[in-house]
Length: 155
Picture 1 (cartoon, rainbow, N blue to C red):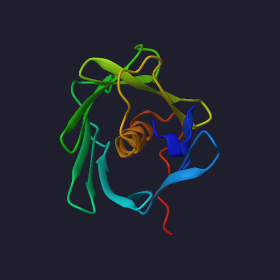
Picture 2 (cartoon, helix red, strand yellow; picture 1 turned 90 degrees about the horizontal axis):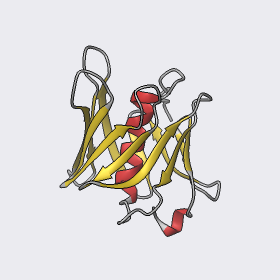
Picture 3 (cartoon, helix red, strand yellow; picture 1 turned 45 degrees about the vertical axis):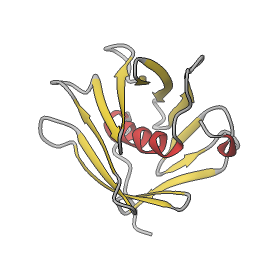
Picture 4 (cartoon, rainbow, N blue to C red; picture 1 turned 60 degrees about the vertical axis):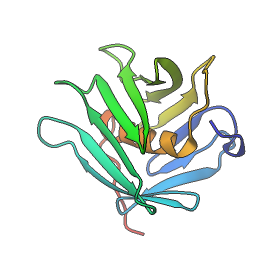
């Protein structure tokens, strides 16, 4: 992922994304994802038959994540012009692998505690763009977290 955020496991704990060094690097407040100087306004819908989320950056860049079939087993993400697939590793587990052009880049692992871990895939051919990881992993929190949906707090 990114050197400045530390190598190792990142984790969503509630509305905060904590890096491998224990530092908060991103947060979601009032439907706005904050990462460094970047802000993404998030809209999502899980009610009804299909999950989808859309975010717009301060510069107008569009980020989307949506299920591609009848279930949420397979998600497709588009982060501006970059496309990714987020596929569950098993029908019985919520762990997902983030793929780009057929190569595994990261693993997203929801835990029973509600914590959602993100780790670079072993032998990843290319590095993920940190903002893409932050957005896609938040999408996984929305769709896969075993605990109630995180409260999008005001503040």
